[in-house]
Image 1 (cartoon, rainbow, N blue to C red):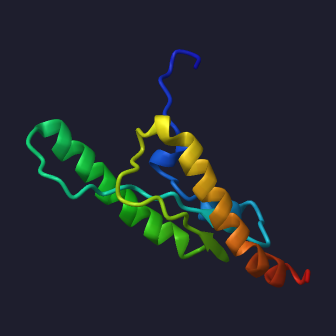
Image 2 (image 1 turned 135 degrees about the horizontal axis):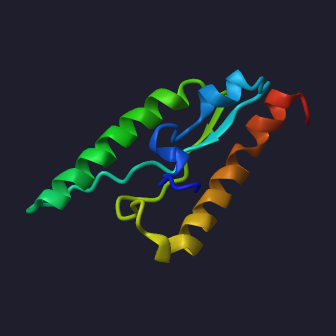
Image 3 (image 1 turned 90 degrees about the horizontal axis):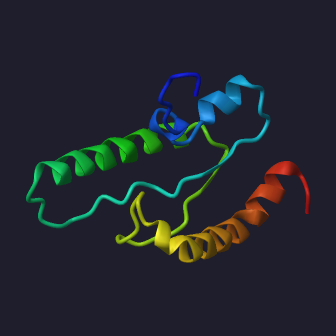
Length: 113
């Protein structure tokens, strides 16, 4: 864009709770799909870099999620990582299930029965 190469905001604000709070949000519902830290043998530098990014991302998410009023964290298992675009239908299904499970808590927080 305008001669610059940009990356997704998730690099710094995976869960932009602080940004939401700064903008005046009254209720922050964060959805954390996590960083899949794979527990497999790493045998090359790319694997080391990816695993490092995943560990840092998980730590960042954990920190940023503390500022959420409600945290939704779909259970995606241990096989879904940031490059699992082919698993989108499964991920969406799990996200919908987690959101539906959190709905009573959201309604209670908002004072809606």
